[in-house]
Length: 86
Image (cartoon, one colour):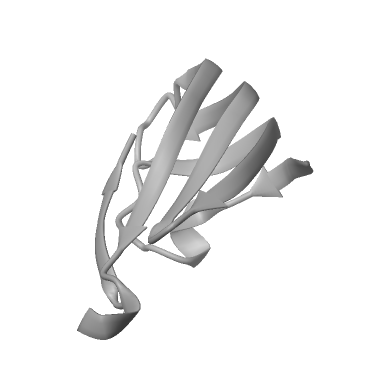
């Protein structure tokens, strides 16, 4: 299990073109592995953000649940990243 808390996080510090410049909130998640896959369940998403580069910045909210899968080639093929699904 994991709990990710965001307090005054600016995603533009990582990717300059990110559409938001402030994120607050949290994500609760857990995951497990299958052969050549990592599966992540986002059990509770509750994030608030501010749209960047606006004269009157708008606040947006992202809430809900989701699942993500990261897929890798098998070890015989080098085990490299193959794809993902949400």
